[in-house]
Length: 302
Image 1 (tube, helix red, strand yellow):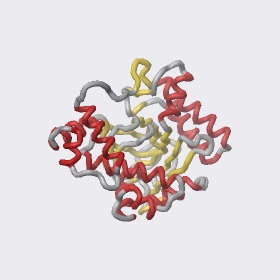
Image 2: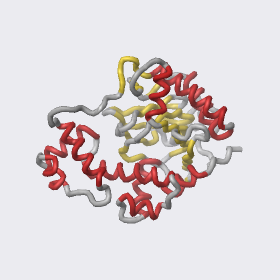
Image 3: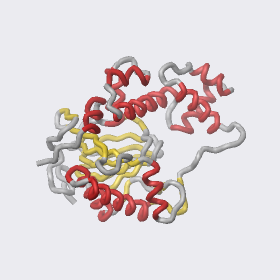
């Protein structure tokens, strides 16, 4: 095990990088060259702290150096050098340094159908669910990291082949064979159904949503009952959930090449600065850097 200032590759934790860089911190997003439904991030963070947020995709990473701490499913987790981090889609979590030196990691964000297809290849139905979030598995960690590096340096065939093999290892070794991700319930109005109805109303108009009393009235409950049901279902009160939805919608539009200024207005933020503030708190990079990262491949480290 390397000390807090070095990682599993033996390099210092703080290094120069292409992308968003702030006082020794750096982060770069890009799309996998051979698997368009997988996005990638390499980053070093020292002072940056992620707000509570969730992803539409799985978030799977390998810690290269230092320690990351994050809250997930009601617990504080610590992932050190060589550890694998897994966060399932829609699950609220945070992220910050667990050491003064910070942490360096490589993340991949496969869409749900990508892992569902991997599970089918292994003879499993549904989408994979993981019993743990911080996994100790050096062999799989090495394969995930190698696949991530290949997405920077390798050809499309090699990069996609290594990534599929690494994800297959992860699902085979760590996904619960007796457990799949839950699907929405049906039937009579329950707190989860009420929350889902309110969620659908918010999704229908993210730019000018109803006020809380109006939203509660639309689903037939009091504002307090709605707040309680909504937080239980999604981990956020409605106003915080809406910010999350706006950021994720902005992410999709930026990936399509739209400008941050236009995206900010389209998803309901007051201005580009408002979008940038919330976007970086949740994804680690500002909107412009995220857009540029998906448009070009990162330059290999020297």
